[in-house]
Image (cartoon, rainbow, N blue to C red; front, top):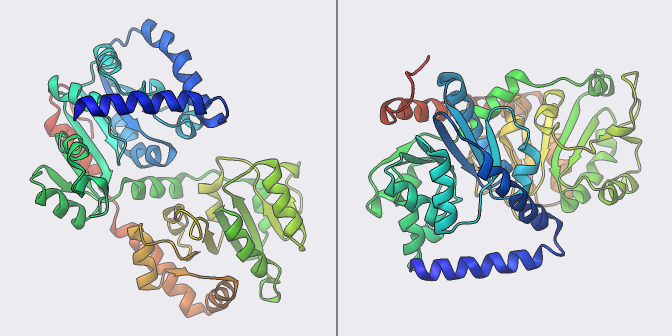
Amino acid sequence: MAILYFLLSQIAYFFIRIASLWNKKLALGIQGRKVQKAAFEKEPFNGEWIWMHCSSLGEFEQGRPVLEAIRHRYPEIKIALTFFSPSGYEIRKNYEGADYIAYLPFDSPGNAKKWLDKIRPRLAIFVKYDLWYYYLKSLAYRQTPRILISARFSPKHRFFKWYGGFSRKMLLSFSTIFVQDDLSKKLLLKRGYKDVIIAGDNRIDRVAQIANTSDTYPILERFVGNQPVLVCGSTWPPDEDVLMALLQSEKFKNWKAILAPHDISLAHIQQITEKLTVSNVKYSQVKDAHDIPQKVMVIDNIGMLSSLYQYGKIAYIGGGFGTGLHNTLEPIAFGLPVVFGPKYHKFEESVHLVQNGGGFSIQNKEELLQTFEKLQNPEVYKKASTVAKDFLENNKGATEMVMKWIAIKVPALKPYIE
């Protein structure tokens, strides 16, 4: 099976290179790996290292609390951070919490050997699902402790299908797997894997950090003034079509909105502003923090979203009409009730919120208007806000569980620092 994996991966990488001639995102990954290859050869990698690998930006945000706890408690340890996708690397390539940041070289016996020979990690941390056979095999051969964090499984995952034996072999090669819920643990136990710990989702620790240390924006403070605000995060066109009915309705007359679309290209931002019949302004157009009378502020940059929710009273989260819901944890960290489309069942927190009155799933613009009107009731709003805050408070602590494991299981590290 390993031979078939090798052949298929080489074929896949060949087609990725071909596709990169037309796909900008793929081209970034191919070119980035080429540039980094020479620099990697020259890097001495002195000292002791821990390696964390993330597929993309979302996985990085899940792993980040662990990475930063390692930095704090083991200040002598150096950290290598790798990404598979440009959408992670390009945004976090200047992140100050790691000593070396790069694309992970494509999985092969030679690349895995070169990488591990160089950094000689005392610990390898993979986040969620981005598993690579030759890297995991080489780590196991070297008896390097290796953990998977923030994992969440369902019977539908390839690991638990009849054809998933090879994928399962990679999964079961970890020293310990930290999962988010009881179902994930049961699935692993059923397949004979014993070293599994229910720790919860590290994203919860991360958003709790954000809520306590959020950047502030004078321009937004002046825009908001004393009016209640609907913050619309990571929206897609189907979300925006539904939102237009609310933003331009009589029910919204005393409110303002901050709209942060997933796609911030000039063309898409223009589509949004052309659809709006109420006064609006792009964040990049505002030059100072004087009074801003417009009704809708369109955020046309990346990096602000997690801090925007501090200005809101209700949040609308995009993606629920498409491939899947975006991050609902960030708004509930500020106690905001959340509204989203119908596709939310993959996420434990969104299911919990809907079941307990802290989140609201809508199918169309009529249901959005009804939900917004319902949240004007002080009792309904108070309950929703409390449910949101309680979920976060009751589910913190995944990072500390991982750190306790590291302190016990990785004796090669320097003494543990509280």
